[in-house]
Image (cartoon, rainbow, N blue to C red; front, top):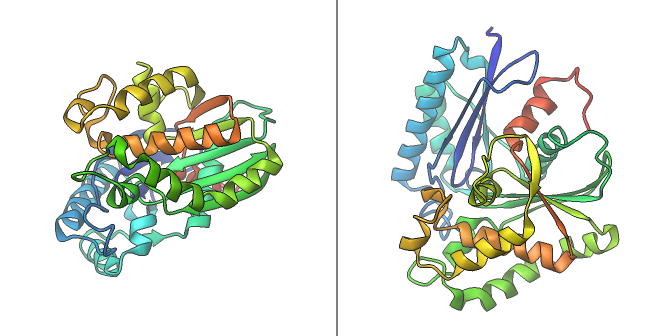
Length: 309
């Protein structure tokens, strides 16, 4: 058995890897790859061959790095989320990865995903964080929400409102366009109805965004997205950049300063969701956390001696 572990978050749009010692949390290596496993899979919920090939190549890169660092594949945890739990042919991909790479993919449901995300976020925040807060993790297929106060989780939900999913439903020539806003807003409002009802009672003061699109939101401010583990985002700047980007065609959005090319196509859907939540709930404080599912998995599953929030 090795002294290090690897945790891979297999998202609908992005695959991420964390390598850490097993006895204490420390980022030894961190990788992020725009795999696009869910591309072409939203309508029929079937993984495409080219997407599975990209995912396989990425997982081989991850496992090769882990082995080169002295890791053992028994300590490599691969976590499958939205598109892997929904796709009709996901088992074929899972079996290929197990047979050819020796990696067993663990598929989790939306509630378990939210629990890991909460654990990651809670361990990134300043000590004595008592503000009633709403966590939001925007993926390609789903969005996880966790409403909490102190160490108490008040509500959690996993909604199929991820960027790739919304883009497959609302677009013009396969890209975001301001003309779809009314239809998009109507759909999202209906899907978030229960969430808003729960939040009306608890009245969260802060929205905390987990990694992903929120990392890009921070980078638009010309600030590094990976340090510190958590920090406040300038809400006024967020809204200024959102307005600017919404009006741009894809070819201009992709070269916008601070924009990651692989996020440019679905980014307006993510910022729409953020603005929707902030506006509906009257939230005045927006935070970023670089910790999410993979970090939360470490704290929750690989470090039982550490007190969990």
